[in-house]
Length: 254
Image 1 (cartoon, rainbow, N blue to C red):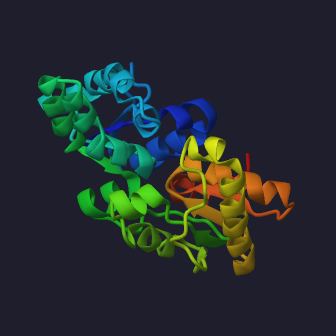
Image 2: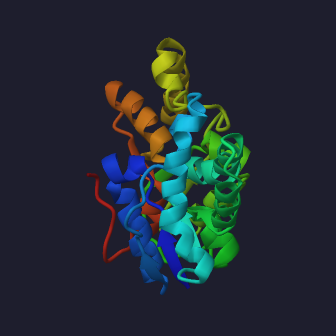
């Protein structure tokens, strides 16, 4: 397959290893991968904070960058972020319509129909759960709110993790509880957010796992900060990084 990677602005700016791992994983599986120039933010943070009108030019840029999928340039678009895929499916067209731009709304819906979160692409589109990864560590998985509630990825990430050589997957207590990030929620409601992530960090530590993983670096950023401040020694590693790790090219902490 020919697959375009939607890196997302947070990953591109702060955690490029997730996008790099996504590319390496897909190429190892034999697919042709492209990272389109011109992509930037999907508009999620604008919409989430009440700036839907200001999101429209951002959405237009996103649609323009990935519109070649509609002409067959790629078979699919993938992002290492359930949050951003959720935005493309559930926010972009709505924001465009509220601004009176039906043409953009329709184009956004068409592009979104080809866009997948990483575990969705692997399991549902490519039909694989064993990607040939090796990650000899104990791992616990945090299902991020958008992947859980907007995308309904279900057990896809867990199925992928259980097939990884050497990996022991440990259930996370109260896994479905939010980590408290929520984009600007963490800034506008700092005390509440801090209490929520403290609870999440305690649950992670209670598992005894060496690594916590998730499909969104936004949530992992919040969680890893709490784990680091507490001196737990637990690493936060994106799902793509685990799946890209092999015996020949093992993951190593940044």
